[in-house]
Length: 252
Image (tube, rainbow, N blue to C red; front, side, top):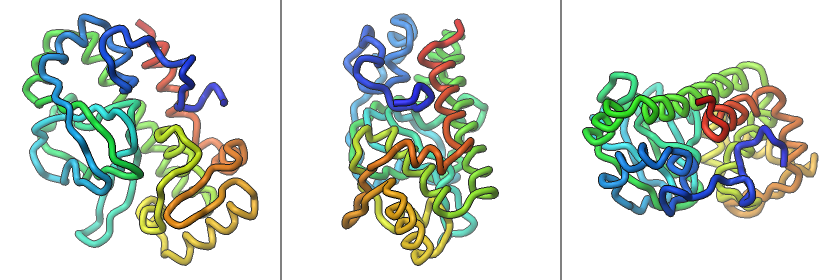
């Protein structure tokens, strides 16, 4: 697997020196920083389709995911929502608290498959980052990585055809579920791409013709990751490289 991708093999993953967690961000905290959070972390189960946050609601807690995928959605109105990014076990949602906002700027919805998460109350987070500059820096580094992912989503939407944009989204999911078989529906692709279902069908057919993926009912099977990366071009890899640089190999 390419060094720039986010998915990590078991040999590459950091030692679980501070807790038994699958969340890469928590794994990469120092023991001292994790100790500030640990007493306040509550395990929760999140099902597919469950709404984690709604735009405009108060941010009462943040969530570190153990697996699966959360879609970050923006909307033009109540009927038209569009995916702007994904977060899985590499990070957390609720970063606007670190930027001085107490309200959710986007909807956050669990996608792909259910998962467990660690929920941290907002007051506990704010107290912890006021105590530790290194904890605050690590969480803000992840926020920076997500902003890069979101900016590449914008570039892809402006510059690429539907099938190339679809290839990128499949890669983002593939990184986070860490399996070649991904539960994805036409409706999910419609949210990510902002196109009609017929355009989704046509783009999937072209990716199948390229032998990059195979589709079954409600699932995508990745056959050729390198082909998906070729189609995605420069819109995939930047955020993933920055995650490795800032979080895995952090410049302390």
